[in-house]
Length: 227
Ligand code: DC
Image (cartoon, rainbow, N blue to C red):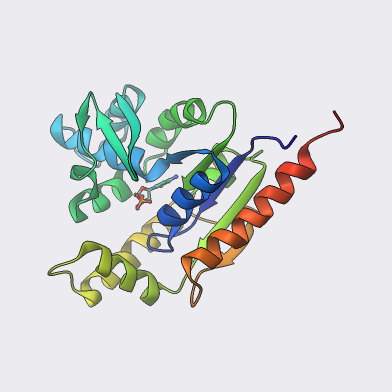
């Protein structure tokens, strides 16, 4: 029997993490944990509660009591905040910026550790984020760092945003966000030492998923002791 692992996929925005994580989870029969959605939900809850995005201690209180729930409806991973479906509200460019800002506060990151670990309890879960292989799940059974060039990532994000999105604007915002995410003092976005680096430039998503799935299956099988 193979073991149910915690699989972490970290990397910058637009590298294809969400799509890859979702497909991988489906193919492995694993759950999916989108940690970026949690930071986005903190930004939204703070905005709704009148808490400024630069007030670390107050944001940590919002994060500690975050009434967040996830549920798959068909192919879509819905996010609920106190029962309210906020799946679309957390994906606006404003909340992308907000999530990046709130995630830079060490108090917020600490407050969210427990929640993330609780949501991944028992393994059999694909976790996507920035620091899931380094800080949140250092003992994860398989870790990946998914990247692509920033122009390619911006091109994909522009397509996702659809009508009216401008490549150069998206690229500029993406570079700013990358810098903030990689440059922050606490839990910067870096590959874990034991992460497998996967560059998705010029590869189809199917190829990327297949590459990652092969590693996970090998690890899950290899991790199982004699029965
Ligand atoms: O993956 P995403 O674009 O939904 O993430 C939103 C923001 O949250 C991103 O700017 C970085 C932050 N984030 C983080 O700091 N740590 C994580 N594990 C996930 C996201």
